[in-house]
Image (cartoon, rainbow, N blue to C red; front, side, top):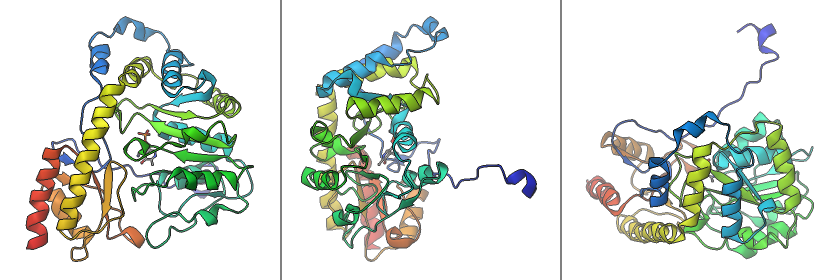
Length: 352
Ligand code: PMP
């Protein structure tokens, strides 16, 4: 393109989502839940009044906000909802990260953070994880324009206990700290417990993982009313009708069915613990996985080659070429049956 025309155009290096193959595969590449959403979601969709789709949805997503507030025992003014946590996180970057000082997030983490920082021209720095892929908390004890990290981290699946999160919060009283808890339901305690104690904390969660609704696109943030108000003001300055009517109704059903939610998590954690043993037996090494995926390498198998061999057999996992993680594969926990297909293949591949 002509430079005169180019000069006013925003160019960014976009986030690259995992593949969504359109033929049937053993799909262990984008951390989806292998089980269907709660039965109430299916009932809502079956009985959907399609005539009502002519109307705009409720811009406040009140029913969903209220169900989430009830579920977590917080006020409705403490919850913000968006189109997947990607939408919520993007709004958070726009709302809370406006300093000349750099926003801090780990060098190995959810790769979208860097894309939003670039898109919104927010300065950022990425302290390196240590040799065992742990976040070094002291790296976050310095002047900054905000902090964000996932817990458990992605793609490492390492979970840090709440005292670790609290240390980062207490050393950064004047910065907004966002804890991205996309995978926390598979791991341990949520930082939501700390919301009343730290006015600089935002906790972001999603319906895409433990609630099996990646296709519905629902995410949310929980914080104090002041920060949630700031987030809403930015949202209404961007797009007031982010949540569609169907998502709002289905989301409410999913939140209400805690029994189904707990059972789904139980099954995935059980399969994960068994998959860890199998991977160890085959000689894979990996940090202790507390999410719905395992980040593993095999000292004798090149990750690139293994990734391609798996793909050829219609088993999809995730791989990032090069750098410190180039020899690792991120394997989502599927059903027991899907994992058995994976292990049948790996058994033959590793021993050949
Ligand atoms: N945070 C992390 C750490 C993730 O891995 C993902 C999933 N790609 C997201 C946020 C976004 O998930 P969603 O937009 O589906 O809620």
